[in-house]
Image: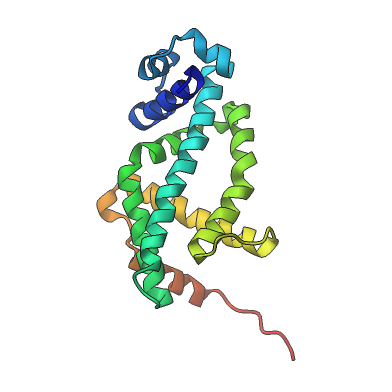
Length: 197
């Protein structure tokens, strides 16, 4: 790897180990074995490097999520049991990627004071939502339309809420079966519009 790639790898390690807010440029340089000056040369600033590292690390976590979904796909033909297995798999990915989720929440809390980060996170929202819509439906891809974006937003909200609960108290986080039960309860309480024939 070159210095740029080493710095990205070191920044990702720091995100997992120290978090977004506590990582210094010196931490990244030390973790990557690259000079402190190389951060400015390759990325302009520590923040730019950390922002890119965060987005790349989330993409890598997406690979772990895809593997968890693939395991659920092979386990049952029953859609409800698949749903439960998928969300149990999501919880398993949190264990290995705990530091990343903590860093994401830290970063999100700072977006009002970090316009570059806010812009970068906004830039990947649409792609992320379509990716989640495809992944959770077991499809290779979905069309870029309002329906799939809405579906992706819903999955994104579930995912972030589950992650927040798991980070705060893993032993109290909902299981896949709990998520399914909650979805049913909420779905049953939302009145459906009846259209005239």
